[in-house]
Image (tube, rainbow, N blue to C red; front, side, top):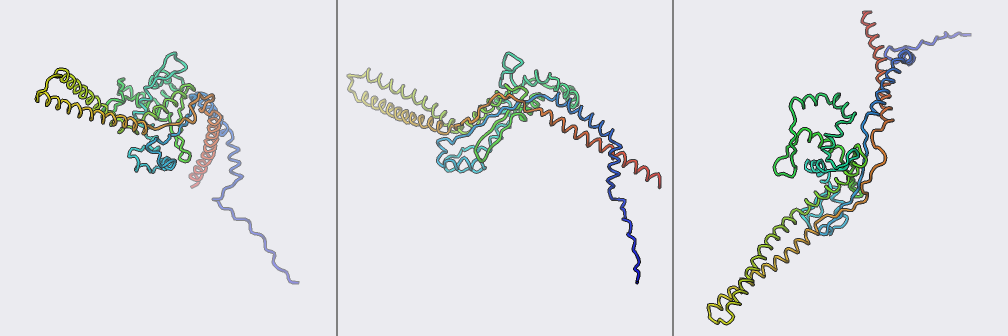
Length: 372
């Protein structure tokens, strides 16, 4: 019988670069106290942040802009195209305002300043107060605001104290550039974050949301923001028609006075020259009669144009249907306390694990360095 040599299996080749799972588990287990301490500290911080975070209530209102009479010839296709950024109404009206412009209106400084200076009713006071006064006199004295102000916001407090801040408040309705104080700009930015608008291009809905520390205040601000948005849109839409109406009204009043004066002059001349048959008298009467006729024709024509201008303004005035009015929210939208705590626990675990393995990594580097 022939015997074949028995080959012994070669031992597996271990690569130093391969990760030893057992070694990792051992390192993890040995550093469990550090990880647990990190998670505990992070959990305490998470609970503190969750408890100290300011409450926030969100109120929502939904509206649908209806096509005005002058732009309804294309039906629903026009509004859908406008939501997509296309303007199909140029053939019928040159002043169509696309719904895609609405967010720009809400984020504009005049809109935010007008909302800032509007008075609202708050729970802690028995009289109306503006949002500017609310944030500078009430919200700024709350514990969470004070902690944030003198920790994260401490550099800003120091800079403001050095530079100073004028308390003059600028009316955004004034002509010329708008100049805001540092406090006004800070409050304006807060309002910009707390009052938001969303467009539903498929359904054509416009949703306004207001998030504030008080439930009643949130509902009031959402409702006021809706009214302001409607006012701004209406003003933009009928601006030319309103200017035309104002011009015709002025001309109408002027010609009305001229017509009445011509009427009085003709009547007075006729009363004073009833039995006079001279050519001069007849010529003067004919002249006065001509002035009266011209004044009357102009007056009547302007009266027609005035009615047409009023109708045009009425036709171009946009109509808004309120699908969902602003309601006082019963539940807080922020802070989400459990989520905050879980996030901090997760971060604590990551930091603790990083500290353990970082410590081992530095230890290995030090050992290799000493062995060289």
